[in-house]
Image (cartoon, rainbow, N blue to C red; front, side, top):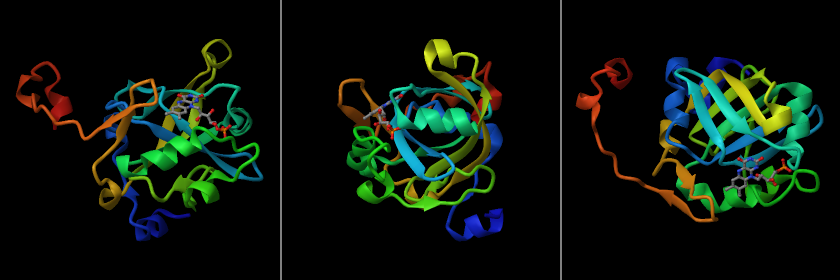
Length: 192
Ligand SMILES: Cc1cc2nc3c(=O)[nH]c(=O)nc-3n(C[C@H](O)[C@H](O)[C@H](O)COP(=O)(O)O)c2cc1C
């Protein structure tokens, strides 16, 4: 799908140089894959920015059906849901695409991206089309180094923003913002 068509669906391109701003807050994300036959979705809490810009680390293990598609295609989409989708997102993380069409079951809509074959998630406020940049840590740590190829943002869907897994089945959201931009003297360029 072309950039123009996607913009009609209310996604606009997000600046590649700012992709770390989507991941650095530590959101629960969903990972969309396409294995050549079917698209699948999983939930992921272990993710991190690796460099300013669009290098992202993601833990996806062989216990996930998604792992096989990521191995086979070297592509995925990282989709960031707002907190109002939390119950459905937890459903996605407690069900396997081996036996379930999670898009249908949890009411998510696959939307073609521009670069990779894995679909964007229409309900999510941010979608990052990614390719695998480095898989050398996968065998030892299930750690995939991904490169964002095309980030998309839909401001209207941002709602109350991302949510975070506290590691025990409880989640936090709606954190207040402490604005310390004037203290970021060494990192002033990041605050613009
Ligand atoms: C809140 C939450 C966070 C999760 N984080 C991860 C993660 O970081 N890495 C991972 O491999 N699985 C994670 N999971 C588990 C997968 O989402 C789960 O195994 C899912 O069923 C995989 O789907 P699939 O088999 O269709 O790929 C998480 C699940 C939940 C509910």
